[in-house]
Amino acid sequence: MDSKRLILATLLSALVLIGFDYFFPQTPAHQPAPQVTQNVASQTAPASAAAAGAGQAATAQAASAAVADVPDGPDTRIAINAPSVQGSINLRGARLDDLVLKQYRETVKPNSPDVRVLSPVDTKRADYVDFGWRAASSDVPVALPNAHTLWKASGTQLDGEHPLTLSWDNGAGLTFEVALGVDKDYMFTVTQRVHNATGQSIALYPYYRVNRGYTPEETGGMLVHEGPISVIDGRLNEGSYKSVRNDGVPPENVAWSHQGTGGWAGITDKYWLMAIVPDQAASVVGTYAWQAAQTQYQVGFTATAPMQVGAGQTISTQAHVFAGAKEVRLLEQYEHDLHIPMFWKAVDFGWLSFLTRPVFFVLDWLNSHLGSFGLALLTFTVIVKVAFLPLTIKQMRMTWKTSRLKPQVDLIRARHKDDPVVMQQQIMMLYRKENVSLFGGFLPLFIQAPVFWCLYKDLYVTIEMRHAPFIGWVKDLSAQDPTNIFNLFGLIPFDPAQIMPILTLGAWPIIYGATMFVMQKVSASSTSMDPAQQKVMMFIPLLFTFFMARQPVGLVIYYCWSNVLTAIQQIIIMGRLKAADAKPQLVAKK
Image (cartoon, rainbow, N blue to C red):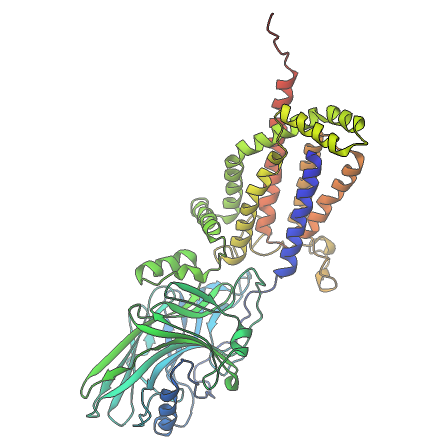
């Protein structure tokens, strides 16, 4: 009976791995965008409005476009040089459209370029942030800054110690300013101000948004969300690129909108995030929109009520812009310091986040003390084994009792072979008499399954695991083993997987298959297994070896070590059970 449970559990695990391999393809997470140089020619076009209820504002802006526009010329840029990011601000349109991350590279190669998170509108992979104002009424045309406006800067560089102010005078009594600051990580502070010297009151809507000018290849399948994301009024919304393109409602092509107070919204990749964080006390409308003419996705916020700028007065509004890596503890720090609701949900821990997050924090804590996520995985495996030791001992006892009862069970089967109902009743009575629980063998498997899922999820979605090295040839625990036996581990200079994807089998998956074979040998020695079952079990390690070849190598290492520990546990526990059973039993005198 126990051997049948082992076969069933193994086959179910194989189906799980097949599902992972089918639904969650392993593809590169982020392609490098073209590098941005100073003074490149700009071919930008005015951006369409993406906020619900802003139709009149768009009309007013269009009416005043001729006043605000100036002929396009070469871009003028101001450098950004902060501890974690570098790039430039485009003074043409006051856009954040050039940013790379100093601490992250595209690949594990030393000469790999830095990861780019923002790129200008005229590049193949445009990602940028813009902000501005819209008129509340079309009765009086107002010249407002737009994508063609050339701003003046108060300095030559934006860094952590030197904020920057951009200004533009519309020539009709309104002066617009944008004060920019950046911290040591990935958060920008954007403060928009309007000075009114027109002699009459003017109502304006402030807006902030992130823009993506292409549809990326989604790398996570169903395992990780990529695309528009927002939290407004404590509710998470995850949109898809397809729904944003197909569900847009003219004239602004807004596919989704929600009115609320504060929150955040943006576009997320597997490891990177562009997000707008408005004033958490402000009433705003968050939107996802698709501008087909510009082939552009827009996610952002517009105020629900216009801001009145009285004659001779100045108004201001502030927001934050995040453009960087989704580091778990950094997101939680921003959540605490800036009171951003559920900012940690930018990392897709999934529906079981109440389990996957704690597992990540344990691994991260172990890594901080051991200096290696690989060692953290090994240590975590020991912790799991110790935590489940009582259940393991119970399972081994049930296995031992079941194997000892096999002769009696065979006798019952032979005696009642013509009456299956009576046969099953007699077997169950025997198990109850000997206190054998059939469910006890399954319980440890069911309880440990969430641990497997949490490890898989954390290895796949957290940037802390990305490019985390281990011993030897393992340079990235979140990627599959880079070696391949089909090219003799690199001795033959070609990639067999280019010919046939199944021709991928690294060293660690082979080690895993060997440890699984040893573990099964140990298990078989403690149970009674018929020849047919033995033949089936011989193929299981080979099957799993190929399945694990495409999984994150960190997960494979975890299971290799887990198999070794399991085999040791079984040898010790079964040895003690056999020794206890061999002791002579004292018989009480009558």
